[in-house]
Length: 230
Ligand SMILES: Nc1ncnc2c1ncn2[C@@H]1O[C@H](COP(=O)(O)OP(=O)(O)OP(=O)(O)O)[C@@H](O)[C@H]1O
View (cartoon, rainbow, N blue to C red):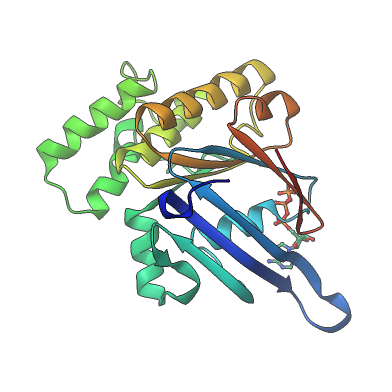
């Protein structure tokens, strides 16, 4: 059992439904778990099991109906919209299946976005962007736009962008879903090693059984409820 005081994330009895009346879908029902600092946690589950809904609730992108979510001592489920914006800017970083890069910006400019939002001076931004691109093995491609990079390279840019602001919690929703199996494994191993090297905590959703073995622990969602932990 994880020491609750060292936990980065507490999820307690979280429930979320979509729609009303006969069309109501229960996306999450009574989900509870704790993630200790430094853990690389995978969440698996079939399509529609609630993985995206859960990550979006943790990252403050969507609100739940009941239950509590606490990230690094801050109660996400009680935050104002402004506080949620700050949470997403300063504490939580996202990696998406579709990479989520801005197509007209270069790799370096994409990586620099969180640092601009933080208002860091240009010289410090440039140095941190350079270091982040080097960490993901893309130091030779700072000036290419996403359309000039492979899928795996684009996801590396997105990973660098997620890391550059030194978030407490990294959330990755099917980050390898658009990649071939070899590249998918490379990307998952890269995320795992960066999380470990940077003392971060990460939650990654995936369907892929091969990739699950890279995680420290796997939780399974089925019809919006946690089925087992291992
Ligand atoms: N905005 C929405 N409006 C209505 N229903 C929704 C909405 N978002 C999700 N759902 C429903 O909630 C359930 C959980 O969806 P969710 O996207 O969280 O699953 P998932 O495990 O991430 O699936 P996938 O692996 O396909 O991304 C599904 O039944 C889905 O149809």
